Image (cartoon, rainbow, N blue to C red; front, top):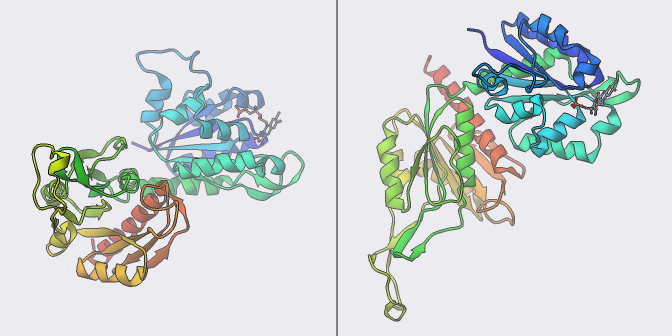
Amino acid sequence: MSQMITLGVSSSISVYKSCEIIRELQKKGFEVRVICTANATRLISPRLFSALSGNRVGVDFFQNEINGKIDHIDWARKTDVFAVAPATANIIGKFAAGIADDFLSTFFMAVDCPVIIAPAMNEVMYLKPQVRLNMDKLKSLGVRIIEPGRGYLACGDEGWGRLAEPVEIVKAIQKALKEKSVLKGKTVLVTAGPTREHLDPVRFLSNPSSGKMGYALAEAALWRGADVILVSGPTHLLPPRGVTYKSVCSASEMEHEVKTAFAKTDILIMSAAVSDFRFADVSQQKIKKEKLPSQIKVVPTKDILKGIGSRKGNKVLVGFAAETENIKKNALKKLKEKNLDMIVVNRVDEKNIGFGADKNRVLFLSRDGKEIETETLSKEEIGRIVVEKIGEFVDEKNKKSGR
Ligand SMILES: Cc1cc2nc3c(=O)[nH]c(=O)nc-3n(C[C@H](O)[C@H](O)[C@H](O)COP(=O)(O)O)c2cc1C
């Protein structure tokens, strides 16, 4: 069965190029379905899209017959990539704000597949801060933007804002489909969040990890087609839809879950901030304040990564490190000592990034000598970069072993 590309069309003057995009996609063997905004149908007839695509066109879902299935949900489930070309300033704003007041914007809410947006508009509109901010927001949410080119614009002006060429849009769709299956058939185990080492039922030793980085990694691995197991310490986050979720509290509980799942794991990403120490004596009852000892003995917890590194076999191991000084040297030492394939170093010496924050800046080192330093990005973007690098590593490894 051919893959289904849903093409969203909004009311830009470059709407005529949508026909060429449909044709190019069909030449590559894709099935195409079109969803238009009502304003787009004032510039071009949906009948043309229906004739070209061979499928019903979505415009007004309240007018469509409901025969047991609701079109925008049913079509969303069957879509492999959703591309909007051309995308007006208006539809970009609606997508970024989460407005779902017509078929196309509601469809964007309903899809669970890669989304590509190709904006087209007059240069002044394109460079408006509101449009830039909306596009940045969409990018940080994982939407791919195909930046428009510079040139003669259909409105008669010259400048930025010209819809990318149909072949470029089709190439981006093919790339998204390829990326979507990079980790297909692989099981990725991600650990996330802090652990809590209790002294008694109401007191514990922990750290400021929010779990955001690990959850972003789990989501990114899901998006690349992997089966994902997420072992998480206590956080306030909702696990991504589709992961097998294991909730743990202490380092020893985390170790147990990792060991249990390890046999079926192909790639282990240890991003949890596991406590290095636990209390030597744990009370089952709350210790009365007046009876709290003046000194409390702590003992080291087990090093989960090190234990696993020594028997990793053909699996890929990715560790995280939080460093404040001698960043590269310390990370390389950990990479070697724990027999890792890659290490991602969080900068915890800078304000507003890393632990507990929404953003992060990381140094990425691999066993085969690769070194990448990211700029400060959202944890979702960092997650996607890390998983992309893991995908490349797995690919190269497979090529070397002739698989
Ligand atoms: C002839 C014509 C061409 C237009 N071209 C564009 C365009 O290229 N980009 C854009 O953002 N808006 C363009 N607009 C304005 C949009 O159509 C307008 O903002 C509309 O409300 C967008 O609705 P939609 O996003 O639901 O399709 C154009 C309007 C007209 C009448």
